[in-house]
Amino acid sequence: MMLQALLFDVDGTLADTERDGHRPAFNAAFREYGLDWDWDVALYGKLLAVTGGKERMRYYVDNFRSDYVRPADFDALVVELHQAKTRHYTRMLAEGGIPLRPGVKRLLIEAREAGLILGVATTTTPENVTALLRHSLAEDGPEWFAVIAAGDIVPAKKPAPDIYLWAMARLGLGPESCLAFEDSKNGIRSSQGAGLKTVVTVNDYTRDDDFSGAVAVLSDLGEPDAPYLRLDREETGVVDLSRLRGWL
Ligand code: XBP
Ligand code: MG
Image 1 (cartoon, rainbow, N blue to C red):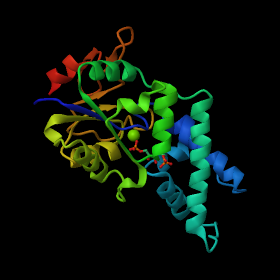
Image 2 (cartoon, protein in one colour):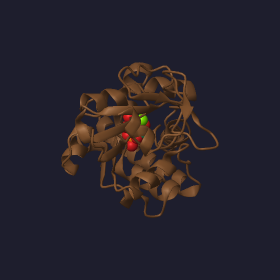
Image 3 (cartoon, protein in one colour):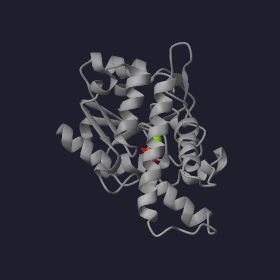
């Protein structure tokens, strides 16, 4: 296989944004609107079954708040809540941020220097991706990526393959020349549905997900002084281009 592009999921893959980023941002928006909704760490794990912030709020009301009486303009409220949540989330990133996961920056730099194309395929809102790349990668971080496929740009979010298909169409590349990086079951269903080989780095929310068919399932990408642990076989190391090419 001639590897030409690396396509990255964002939440959970580039950074551990869900528990300490998105979750408190949702809660801040709920408080701002006087709602008694409060998503603790365990509940949020259940809500992650649904991707997309607006979709997740609806899922919560449908499945966990039978007591909640929806206002007539509930759809508009969800949109407003989500805008408030995005405001809180991007402010949190600007104020101190959420660090990239081990090995992410190292691999992005190596891939860039080697002339590989970088892309993003995520269900999160575009502003969130830009804020993370700017504040946690580099001031010009967003420009490292030839395509940032994000949010409502495709109506069917992960686990649908649409967002990866959209990103590859933009790049003019097929799945045989790209490699995806994901952290969750919904993510790998999306990338594999688009025909992509996928490397998985797990986190506390996704450790027990089904990652059948993954190229490798890892604790993280690893750093020279803190190698990854492979979960699908006994192996430690550091993910760099030569290792990726070896796996493919
Ligand atoms: C990420 C998501 C997103 C974020 C919140 O999934 O599901 O909804 O949790 O972002 P993935 P928004 O990592 O599989 O892309 O509120 O902007 O949707
Ligand atoms: Mg993810």
